[in-house]
Length: 222
Image (tube, rainbow, N blue to C red):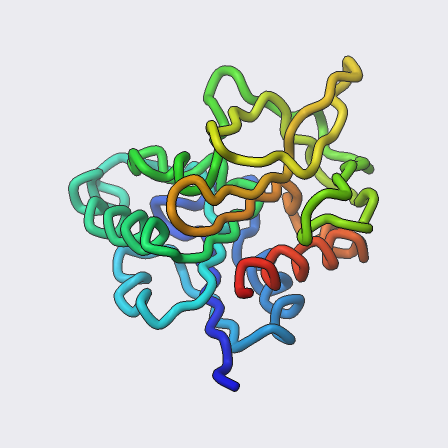
């Protein structure tokens, strides 16, 4: 049996921020997914996808970052990266987006369609981090039988889910309204899973969260 190759892109440079330790969470995720294949953690730089054709699962764990050209290149400089990622995903690639993946790649016109949704600046938000409950649907291999995840994490609210994506997990905002936080997307030609969980390493201490990650990756690799 051929070993599956899993590439985790950890936020760096243009796609990192001071509020998230993408390196730490990426290495925790690598440990969780290690039983499913050969895992590599790579900084999110322009040449990170040069060998994308040999990747079976791409995990995106980057942030909103900075888009000033003098810092880490212009939108034009990054166009090749985003064109390659979108083309690969639309041709059947498997993408797992974690937490800030909904709040990254604003220079990529196809990213929200690939991921299946987006954090909308000025609209999306989260209450203060704390112990939170995330309800999961019994209607898909990713979440069937899990019931709920309880973890120390942020509750992302008012995310915009793309047409065709299927919501599998929700949380409640401070007003008691349901908010989508986990979904699957096959409308773009490939397979994607997005989970809003994973602000920092404390979230991955929850057994339910680790199982959700394993289930997500297993389905994407199947």
